[in-house]
Image: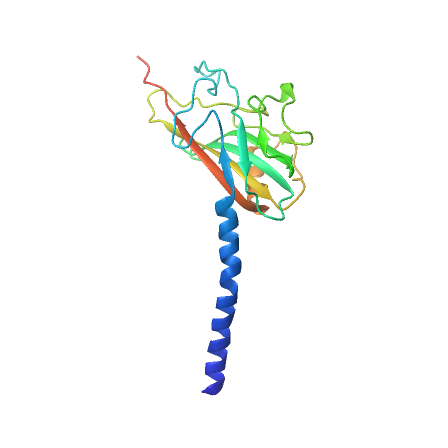
Length: 196
């Protein structure tokens, strides 16, 4: 009986000791924030950021993104933009950037155009579901309810991912999630009226 009480007491002590570490991890995640001067949480994405093809006539400029509060141990960042509402059965990858140096805390507007070389040195923009690297803005089917566009910055525990610009979004997502210490998101919407 005494042995059982000791085992239960020891287990309880372990649980108590584990709580502060878990709370600290939760706090680190809570402090990690993503924002944009062009795209606001719960807002509507402007024509500046909308795709310029497939019947859409936006300017296809990636928004500026800023983040802060990355957890200790962050060695690099990755950014994705994903539409879970695309009528594909698997969503739509609009932007994937990884191997962003840990010293970076923002991307300027237009960094999603690889030809402008505005992304940090060493970072990689890989192939979106539009079939090419770089930012591809919203362009949902006409008449659909507004789609959600989720911008996510991931704090990673590795300096770089073993991937290149030809890798598709799902593979990037796999490596990013395997190496994420924390993530912060920003979700906005965009819809097109039904065609007449």
